Length: 332
Image (cartoon, rainbow, N blue to C red):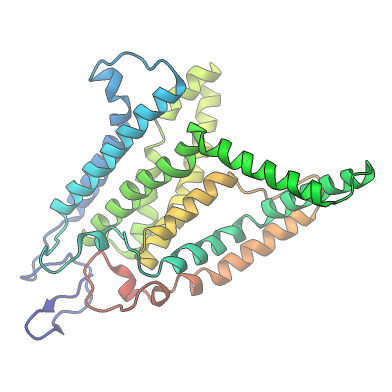
């Protein structure tokens, strides 16, 4: 798909097609090049995490924090390398395209890119949210039964506990991994870089949405050996990693959908952080049937609002003068 613009007349000269962008009408990217590049980026994203000890022969880190910081640096290097490599491979007309827009890195329509994807994603977690609310209500009920009424002091204590937990979260290296480094670097590599490559390689929209998560899930295969060593059982490791791969494929498809539909990297990024925070959605609870009802209602609401809340016009001031990585221009 592409629109070829004549700079002198500012008129659309070619309609949407399945080919890559080209000034002369010939495809500048092939499907095989796009796929090979995506595979290489996925392998590099994982391999560089082990480079300090296997290639650089650095001594083992003396603490978990040092270990994670070392991995943060490797993930950052991988992300920068991927962005540079894609800028050299993609058919970017440097005088006409803003490089950041290729990767969906934008400041415009920011509140839409945050609020609407979070609203959609929260619908998938309706059962989880209802369960958390019920637990909070039960906690308040226990306080009343023990003679502790809701007073100004108790409200202050709740606020202080919340502030303390926030500060403790900010100093937790695992929280930095789960809520910042992993979501940001993974979205940059597996969405911002790979999706433009596949789109400009001539793949159809839905093929890209479902193909890109495969690279994302395969990048998690490195956990197989870790789980096997930890549990001492290969069948258990295969079961855990298999479930993880299935979940990452589902989430990756959703994140890819958000990126293609909106053209905004913030949309899948906030959804990624939200999912990492709440974990696997709770669908059924022995505690009450309300969780199941909320989960079903949330799923129906998600399906009903999926396309309206990701309408390209909500996230873009215009949907013309598009390049091959702006598939939302033809996906109304």
